Length: 77
Image (cartoon, rainbow, N blue to C red; front, side, top):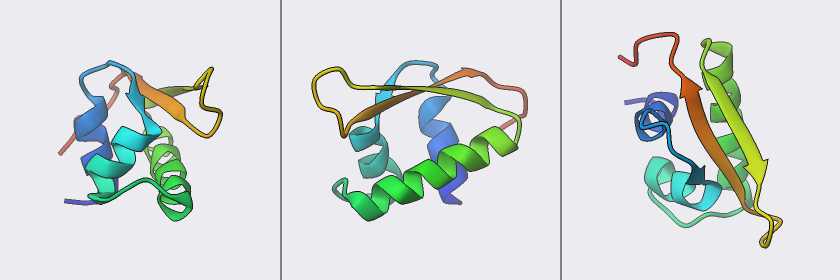
């Protein structure tokens, strides 16, 4: 399964997920700068596919972001 599909499968529940959680679940490792860059790229890929992914920065830990899929316009294969 591609990383974009893995990401969409995590986000499809519609709840907020931290960048740390997504990095761990999609890349099967600990979050780091490279994984953050890759995660940002996969979020962008999701948006290009027509999915609405919203994000917000964590109020206490500025390096942490939160993401949520708010509507699913295309089926996740």
